[in-house]
Length: 502
Image (cartoon, rainbow, N blue to C red; front, side, top):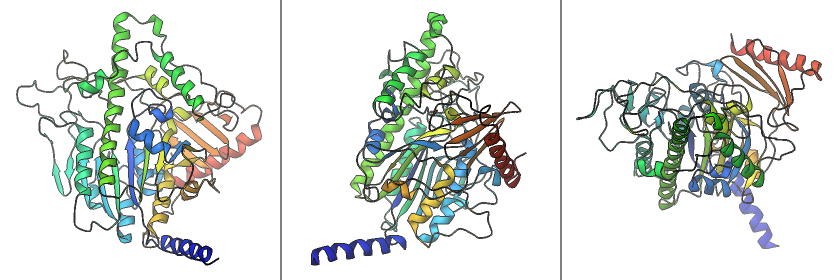
């Protein structure tokens, strides 16, 4: 009996400390760029991602996590807890997560891509090393060629920031590769001795595998021959693995209709080039996973892994883009510093298996992201747990605030947070959301209310899907449920008016 009372006392004391922020976890938020929904091994992919697979096995995989379908809008919602429409490209009228967590004693770091015009170092981050634009040359991000190289024809002349130092152009050492460097900087910060006992928040914002397709030769070589059978072969193989691992059920998530070219009609040269595009894309994801492994090893060495919440997700669906070639050297080997290639629509459709569409689209292939949460001391669930609770980028800041405790500050002068905390999912509970989830980017708009999703492109008719019965949006029910369409459209219109959607 005394032992039982003692255990209960310890449990209550732990809960009391946790609720007041005394048991604050470290937080590592990892964002990939333009990756396919099924690229990771733990989401059905053939790409070698053992480190993220390990996190998934010992954490939670989410099947209905949502982004905004676009790079810069995703970053606004992810880091502010607001729908991006309440702000602008420079995050005005918001508080950033760095500004919110610093009052709670967190050290705050951001490494990698920003995609806005201001320096995060001025907005609550102790360190920001990265670039303020949207896409760079992974090997040489400046606008000047290295000695002995041809003058570049493609230039992404973005400002880089190293804390308070702004550099334009940034011409690094010859052994620079963006994915590796972004991780190097993060690991260096973990070694800082000052305030080493304080919790930290690290935003690891990779630009991989965004175009241009650049990768280490040894990583590219790993995938020789893997993609020679084409788009539909890879798409169906991934779908089969997704069914086998329980991510989806064939009855409620049939593989959506293909939206890619017929492989058999491509010429031999076209097949070779298309396979190589995907081979380099896979190498970029592989290298990102290797670097995440380096970070995990460092956390283990510092004995911080157990009390670190690690969340991995992607900013939008796989990119369908095939930008106009702007090359330094038309004869450059693909994947090297002088090349400029992208995967294009057919591969984007394949690697978003089992969903429709891709980046900047309002269908599930544009707005649904793989998501992993790993936290040994805070997530006490069986291995390979899958959460099917719909969640959104707007939920991250409320989650981090709850974990940080009462000292995390959000100004009452700013718009109220749009999201809810994801903490209940860490104990296997469903999320209770009182408001629908809303989406709008470019020509697409959507609303999700419980299992119902209403979606529209431009002025085309609204489409209605029951995602509990049709996860891959194969049966439009708008004609059968006209009253539901009317009511959900009214809700979307009210939200659009409130947040200023034009």
